[in-house]
Length: 329
Image 1 (cartoon, rainbow, N blue to C red):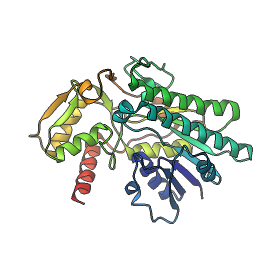
Image 2: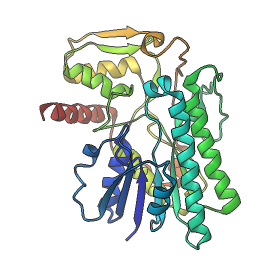
Image 3: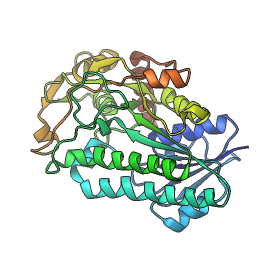
Image 4: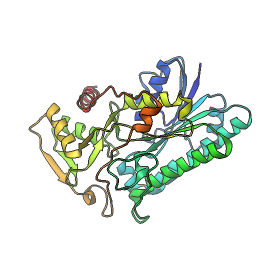
C-alpha cells in the first residue's frame, strides 16, 4: 500500500485528490493550515481507516520532516489561492508559494540520501506563462511577466521559481519530480471567496443577484472539471516517462467569460442581469489581466491517455447542484 502526503489537501483540488487516492487503496495523509481550505471539504473521507488529517503548515520544517518520513509520494498543492488574495496580499503570496516548496524538496532530498526516493508532484499554474502573446501556450514557451510594480505578476513569478527549484533538484540530485500547470480547474466544493469565476457566478445566480463580469467579458479561458484534473495527476505520477516533465493540465476548449456567465444563467435563471465591472473596481488600479489562456495539451496526451469525461455544461450543472445543496444544509 502506497502512502501519499498531500500538502494543501483540505483545499478544493486537494480534497478531491485525497478521495481519488483513497479509492485506489492508498494510505493518505493531508496537511493543511485551513487558511483557505477547510476540514469540511474532507467530510466524505475523514472517517476512512486509511486517512489522516494534520492541521499545520507546510512551512513548519519539523512537521514536514516528520510527515515525509514514511511516505512514498508527495503532492505539493499548498499555495496562495485566487486572484483576489494575490492582489491584496502579495507578500503572503510570494512566501506561501516559495518557502514551503523549498522546504519539501529539502526534506525529500534527506530521504533520498537515506536511500529512499520519494516522488513529488508539484502543482504549478498557467500563471507561469504570464502574458505570453501566443494564442495557445506550450510548456516550453517563454515566460512573459509584467513589471514588478504590478503585484498581479508575483504569483506567476513565484510559481516559476518553484518549478526551477524542483527541476534543479532533479538535475543535481535525481529527485523524481513531476510538474503540472493547472488551467482553470472547477467543480464541486470550489468557493468564489477568492475570486474564482465559476463559483462566484453560481453563488450570485442562486442568490438572485446580477452576475458581475470583469472588464468586457471577452477574456477567453478553458475550464476543466476537477475529477479530470485529479485523474491526470495520478496517471502522471504512475508514468515513469513523466518524471522531470512539465505538463499543462486542463481543458483546451475555450469559452469567453461573458459566455460562461450566460451559460450559468441559462441553467439557473435567464432573467437575471449581467453587470460589468472594471478591474480597477474589482481589484486595484494597476491590475493587469490576460485576454486569452488556452493550453496546448499535446505533451499530456502523448504521456498519458488523457480523455476528459466532463464537458462544460455538465460541469456547470454539478457546481450548481453542489452549491444549492450546501445552501439548503
